[in-house]
Length: 117
Length: 114
Image (cartoon, rainbow over all chains, first blue to last red; front, side):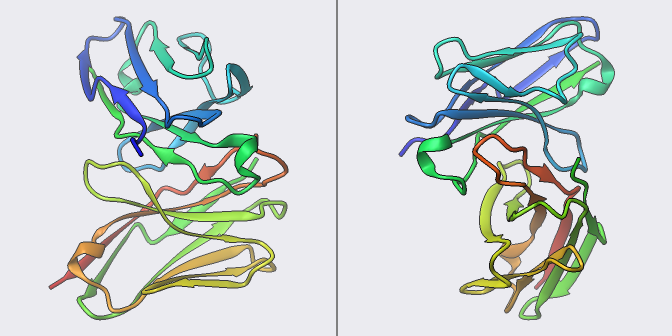
């Protein structure tokens, strides 16, 4: 089966610019996650969707970050305006969600490496 | 919230030796503990996980043990090979439903010397 797809793979922008990332989860996966992975650290959850509804966005810097999953499939994550400290790999992951039971695995995409200059 | 810590940050072993990577967690309600392997420039991939009702789980050369009283769990890799070299992340989650958050540690870089 195809894995989680993300684009672009790399992005370089200047501070105060805007950027958007796209994620296509595994077909049939109801739950979608966006993580931020700063160099040398583990992934940190930014936002979790169950279908097209937000389940957890407690760690999303809402003054500059936004995300949507309008049709319950693909998702976009936007940063506006970007800061130097936003330089990181942004990972998208998906899981079956409720249909998979409580222990269903999260599958990660390849990530988008963002560099803010 | 949950806090997951991994120490040390790097581990180097000789090929064929065993490696043990330890994690501690803070939330006694956490009941699911996965381990992810991330090779350089690649995505994290689940290699093994354990639930709180089990003390140990094994899959070929890898095993995970859980001590709920001490709130720590460990990854054991036997007969290490160069391809085991990667960053290993532990994580913890309170699975009260499908909506609870997975909290990751900072990762340990394992180097297997040929």
